[in-house]
Length: 472
Image 1 (cartoon, rainbow, N blue to C red):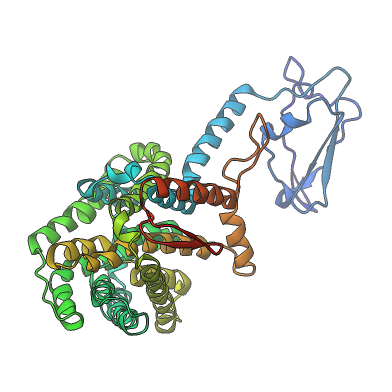
Image 2 (image 1 turned 45 degrees about the vertical axis):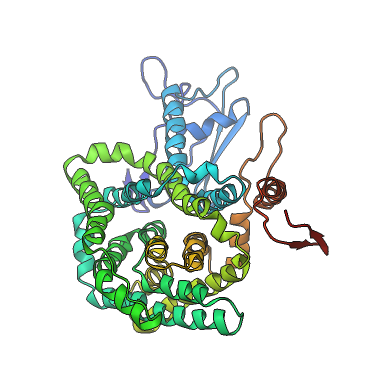
């Protein structure tokens, strides 16, 4: 109805006592309706009324909390919720849980790392022949959630693509050279370990950076894919040149194998996802809720398998020192890529998202390629230690920064800690117990020490609380 005071809307109450059997409008006694302005009308789902069964009054407030409606039921009458609507709500909640599986990705990556350290056979079955299909599945998930227009828009930003390329093959090799020199001169590590750090900085970008960008800023995932594909395609020429310049050794790279890898891991899966999204949209809509949990398990295998397979290199006598240097190297690359892109694109409307994307591109690289090159072209096995450690460190730091980036800027440290310490198993039906990340880390650490001693993983002397554990 309309009047001089404005437009008003009376919502038909969805309760059995308001309408009689002949469908005539009937207002029971003592039932008051407040006529709300149209701008204040807020629909309330029927399922929310089910929790008030058995109570005498039901009060619905609008968002401004200035207007309210009170309904008093006649004696002996109850509000009956619609069963089919409750079933739909339960189904929607399951779909929401599947879609939100990516929120536990940092926890799953951390758990897979601990599992690979404690029990390597849990991931050793995931050999290198499965790695390309696994990364291809992640790219397929990105393609299903994208369109060809997104990639067309990505090619319209050549300045950002060039900045990502500079971060990959200029900034990162310089940082690798610096930390390689520090490893040899300051920490007194063997020269092959310094060469391994430099080798890590010479390879192309990692496909996991595309997935991290997709989780953080989905609109820029095509741009990240273009950057990584370009760096991978040109790595057949750039990586040997950088290795000769920094390490003094020319590394022959398999051009055919690298091009085939790009086709299998990047181009074919993304093309399949885009075509499926365009030709069969309903099928993609049905698939999307199941892609996040499968992608989380896929990422866990991609992180845990290299660590489990190269466990002897990671637990070598130089493992701790090299790990700290690798952490510093990746952290410097992430930070440099973030602030350098911020200074170059400070006028861009999506500058923060672009900073995060270029940070992932600069800090995450294909450590598996560096590991393969080290095992194939270097006789000293110590060269493969930094790439093996970098495979795990890069993944952990990348997804941790992804978690950090989605925290509120005002209280980011507290939000980040609360997110990591969020209960994984909360309110158990039987005991009501709750386990946090700290509890799990403590339990796994204690278990890992005992198992590692039994498997002779501790092949050198450790100092724990001032007590020396004898060498086995």
